[in-house]
Picture 1 (cartoon, rainbow, N blue to C red):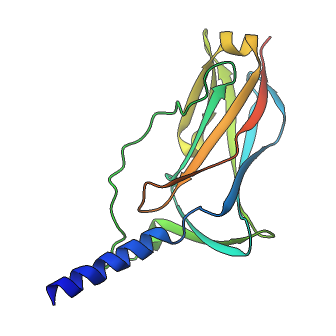
Picture 2 (picture 1 turned 90 degrees about the horizontal axis):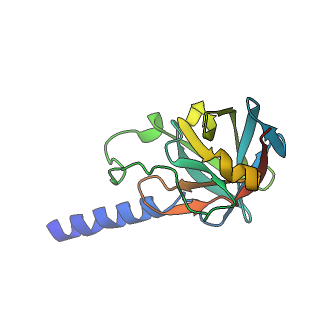
Length: 178
């Protein structure tokens, strides 16, 4: 009896962890402008659309499973944003997770769209990009942008209760420095 209970519990956890992920979706960013200057405000819209049909996705209400970072294209592209350590656990079998998680049914005509407002500022050596709603403060050396003003926005969503990540198509913008 104990083995049957453990087996059933593992099946529930396996199937609940694998559903509602971001696989078979198209994820990309839109920006309100193609070029920005220091002290400009900017908008980034994250869009998630299924490749076909309808799909359910789950997103943490605090958007903690969305990561966005900015990279100068003159350097090696990698995820430079500091990674947060997460304790990975399965879904609660006794509590209602809807307090922390929003579930969306998306389609080609009704994709998930979320717009974030940010600000570009500068320090002596760096250009600083902030998105307060996501607690993101990222910087790029001014010297890199003087060589090539192109900046690449990268991002990913990771699945609730899993470490699997799906990546957004990178988006290039220009940061013009005087």
